[in-house]
Image (cartoon, rainbow, N blue to C red):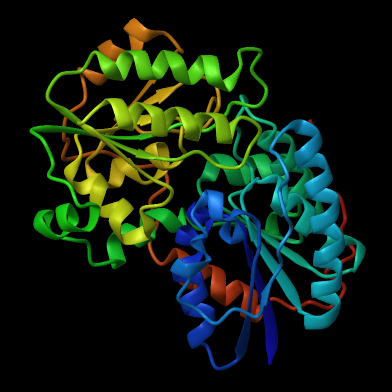
Length: 376
């Protein structure tokens, strides 16, 4: 029986991985080893391990003393050490990772040194405003199987020297979630957040742009100024991740909510509540990838602010604006529910396709990668 070790480090990542975890767990020829680490295990980020519905093979806790650059660097080294011990104990046949987080980079580095094949989901994408860009492409080069979300991203992974036969365009897991999960009714959603929706409602998520010269505090202050000008609008915040500056943003959210009766905040809405929110809000505001990948399939427009997601392929329903108060306000006024939007991330049976490749691919000599050279 092939042992598939899936590692999750954040609330958003787990939500995306859920359908794949189910596919692996139900396959009698596969053994799921779920490893939970990162902000899942930290109280100040919601302790979202409590939302996980699958059997956990190992919890790997590393204390994040602070999310400064030095603090994150020290965290990464400690996580790599603990993941080495975890992989040595579990002895997986394949390690599955998703995305571009610094935690996942440490996981991939550990698996690489231990000669464990890596399957990477969501490679080939670009986010020019964050250091995630470097981590994502580095993870691609450490990986042996690649599952991309669009044809463009597949081509980019191949451009990085990966063999085309190992790169599979399967669409985005987040879009598949929308098609398969039973969402809450409006009444159920309102009860779940203990708040009534207004005539106009916004879902706001802003993560630090770690490569910008302007501080996360100054960036988010501009966004809050724009939001404070809105009238008769319910604002639902989901808090920032553990990147440098994330804690500062979360404190600013708490302060804003205390002063504005029309605003509420959550560390995590969880998968069902978050997707349900996309059904009822007028738009998504901030710089979360969900506003680009999932929101279009829900008929939900997005205002993508700043450079964090710069370079991502996006639907026409996504409005890209600079970090400018007036430009943000102007874009928010354009938000409305839309019916027909072509989502480049949409593809059928994404999790099943990934599971089948993980199951059927021969692992013999898979570690011996030959660079695929694109001749001019």
